[in-house]
Length: 262
Image (cartoon, rainbow, N blue to C red; front, top):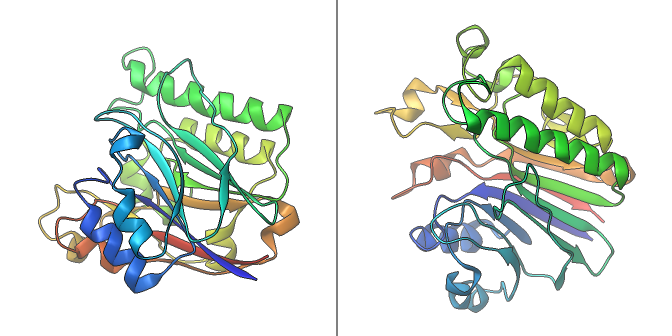
């Protein structure tokens, strides 16, 4: 059975409910994982989603900040959430499908502007968050799982518009890439997007600061779809829905899709 999963940092699910509905209606992923919902769970506009065929949701909310949610056509049960780096933030939620597949939805801290933990507490929290992810995956090796989310790191040279210019910019620094790689290796996670699209520049985020984001195309691939090796070969059809970045009142992220034959 093919199951299409999408991940999207929505930057306020209530403010951008119209484009979430548009995405669901026009592109119809079976599962949509949202980050930066900026809403308590009881304020997420579930009625609209249910009315177009997405009656199932698991979520963790937080007023004005963070927040993660999994919207699903398919029955899904709450499989818990994790707190990392000593932060009381709604940054992770897991849901389990009836076929036994677990969906992990992560929102890794952005890390502030200065890539130095001694000068910037937020950068230290980001590194600690990734370290705790690594340790969790080592302690409880994931199986039959898909991990998606805004991981706030563009790891490869072709995941950013200029590797040289961004080496000292948060999201592409070597220490962040190293920490992300350790977390990925600890769970034996396969980068599904790059499994399907192994070569070439690929972005999922473009700054609001760019007047013409598409022409300038100074993007970064911050949003990811991973899977455990036991199901990674079932994945295909990965793509970034770039056009969504140009919709009315958009998020600065575009959704990333992958389909799994499970």
